[in-house]
Picture (spheres, rainbow, N blue to C red):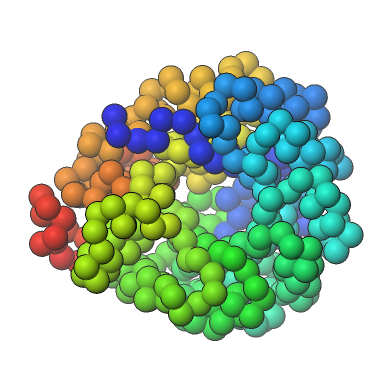
Length: 357
């Protein structure tokens, strides 16, 4: 088994409540909080478990919905930080996300924040997010985060409806002062079924373009649900004469093997545990079983950490250890969590050098 042995990042959906109506929302969020959400005390207990049962302790990302819909968010950030957990927050850009709130989160111990930007203009972004004025609120919130000295990540949806705007969005991200730009390649779950994913050939061209931006932009580019970006970056580094060790020390090298269920664990608002927010295979609930135990012992998680058992092109690919394909997309499109990722255009030979796309 060659996957990541302990979760490095825990994505925690504190609530599904949100005041936006994003067209691609995985959580199919709505304005009101659920009655089955974990209580504050239950959340504290899970945080204590994560801090003591996993070495080194994972980084916790509080997300949603909109985590700001929970009045105990600040207290939970303080609890996590006090336990030695790294903690970030991924709020929605609404009127709740004020400069004062950003300052309070920094004082509580938050180490990073992210906001989503799906268009370079108000018309494009607000059309995806479903709320007029969201674009302006996003820019104001981003400015407050940067001004507070909190590392900012901008998340951008990549699909047929947004791909032509990526160059302009990249320029905007640079101007904002973000440290990282994460490109989320659409998974057809939740409301995301109404949008159009890229073809494999379109995705390959888009990822090649993203890799070509390295060094030209003042931020690091990463991907969500498109781990074959690592393969593209590695191929470019090899062509540039970089050694294997140099590649391993690069940002992409540090992400080798991290994907849904391998280095990543997701906790839903009601305590259900899945390999990621986009892979809704419930393996248990933190109300009954410790998250670390589910990650370590559940058969689904164990299978996701064994890329040599993946099927189709993902199993045969020489890059399966560092990439492995999107397990969420394989599940969403084929019903086989170990199947091949249809978004990848690469055909690999045994060495990984003579493949084609």
